[in-house]
Image (cartoon, rainbow, N blue to C red; front, side):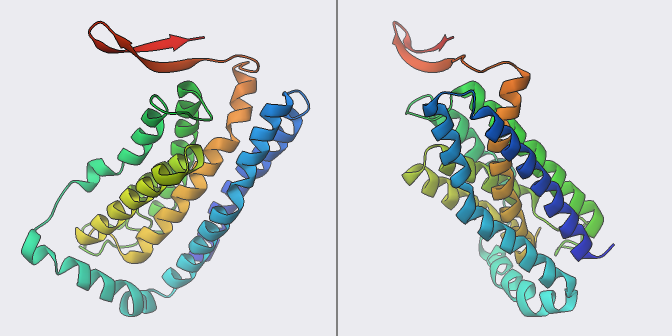
Length: 256
């Protein structure tokens, strides 16, 4: 199977989720309040700019990867050599194994202390949706393309799962909170991608593709929420977990 066929199948899979979720959102708009319908519309409109860029990155990366020699000699190798050379002074690090989860943790936690569009339960559902889509897409490519890692250890380099996880969380933060929260999350996710190359675990094109898949997966997570609201009969119900002062300091309060 060629890389173009693999990328085509992956994008077809994500597109099917987009179309299914979009259809469900249109049906729900007839029964939701005007305010809720407007909120769903705004969420769908947020998709267009970043998802267009992410989809373009997937196509470009796939085309470059198809020419393995061109990729290694003209793009990936020079970048890898420049970054990995820093190891001589600083050595390797495993911080990226843990840092990849920080943006998603921020997505779940920031809403406890500031205003958010969705409560903790909904954010947890969105994050779970996004993670499932991202994991399926990343592993489908890893074990189909079977690209050798730059350190020669295994043939599952493309795309970078750590980077996909980090950028998924960053996009979730950007969509939910925006502003400086989103900028900080994207900065952190970029650092994770750089560390994957610094540790000689991924090529630049692996990281670029992982970032694109992460962004796409975050949007898929939001679009699947209306379907879950129907399954779990959540329309018209509201719940909120908040941090409140207590005699011993701070406490969590859950209202429903």
